[in-house]
Length: 253
Image 1 (cartoon, helix red, strand yellow):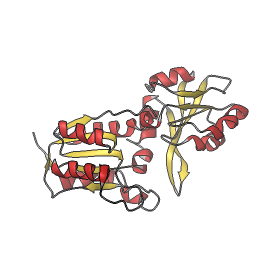
Image 2 (spheres, one colour; image 1 turned 60 degrees about the vertical axis):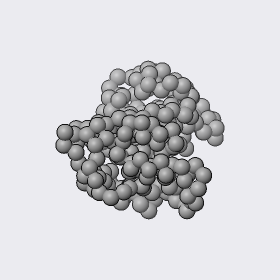
Image 3 (cartoon, rainbow, N blue to C red; image 1 turned 90 degrees about the horizontal axis):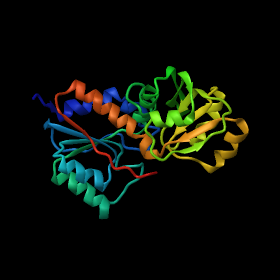
């Protein structure tokens, strides 16, 4: 088996995910967050969150490199103590590099959370939309055949969705903004969508949905953001001959 060097991998990820494009608008420290010297990478694990559970599972998997959507740094200094210290120490003691991609992995038009969900639904005429500080992070597209919200939720494998079912016809046009995207229901309506798919619900948008007859499918923040890391895992497995594993630590939220 041929392995790749860590620096080659991070350079590829930085370029492919367009990390620099988001450096002034994303509070996440995207890119390599914890890393040792350049070395061979044999096993890459993917997860939504850089929590103690996923780090411990990465250690069990004998990972060299960990790619997550939610990393360790969120726009402000944080003391290295308590559980934050434990995370850093576990990564360093077990020689695991940590790479994070937040907005870059929401917005990407091949492996992003929203594009990956659109692909799962076989949407056509998919367009990038939902501008956030100058960059589009969501998508909108059309089903080839109209479906019910229940059918759509089942295709996306949402286990415990919250459904605001107010559209009075089967769904044809869908907007997708993963995670905390409920506030984008207004733009979804303006784009002609009958349904917004996101992660978390928002009480303040309930009556807008009801009055404007637009539906919202909230699959859970976690579940709506497994799509990007899984799609990126498939991409890297085709590019590099390394061991690839997805670590599932659902929150139910």
